[in-house]
Length: 274
Image (cartoon, rainbow, N blue to C red; front, side, top):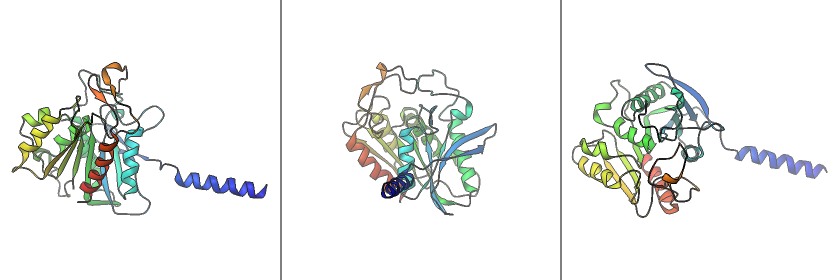
């Protein structure tokens, strides 16, 4: 009996040690109101390289979890690599749910979400555990579109703090940015599937190619055969139009591509390590 209890105790200890880290809720001042965010931070005093992670139109969290599995997966991966990860909740902070099927969203990628990025950066610059010269951006879909606006030269902060180290955009909507002669002031990586019919890989390639010679380093990786959400784990390919899920786009196809998912994880690690 004693051996059995000892074994059970050790099993519980191991399970606790392997349990997913719980994020910390933080509040970040905005010009009007507060921006709620979830923070994953390594143990210790730092300073740590830090990634601001921008959710898509599905929002950051759900009823049961402040961070959806798709974003928690990336946060834990980045945390394991030694990064702190700050995930602003652009919709929940404004008492809004998913915006994928909202015709006139009150939270625009180029306005409110860019303001959220600026506020998150300003807050991080004041934290002693942050390596201020190693703060980067990563975003998905609508969050990636906001990222493209946030790294434009016109969006640079006016303080004396270091700018973002790098930026990584998963399958953004590049159509407006491509037409406006987009350029970036920080190294920016775009990752998108060749068969993405929610966003436009052609527009993203046009945007990146057009930035050459008048921009910080901009690079695009297009994954053959991959669709929207290719990096999202355990998601069989399906048509978004057949879903009533408010957190899904109204058109196109979504689903995991195992090869593109694995390769994008390597690309992200290498881009952040620059």
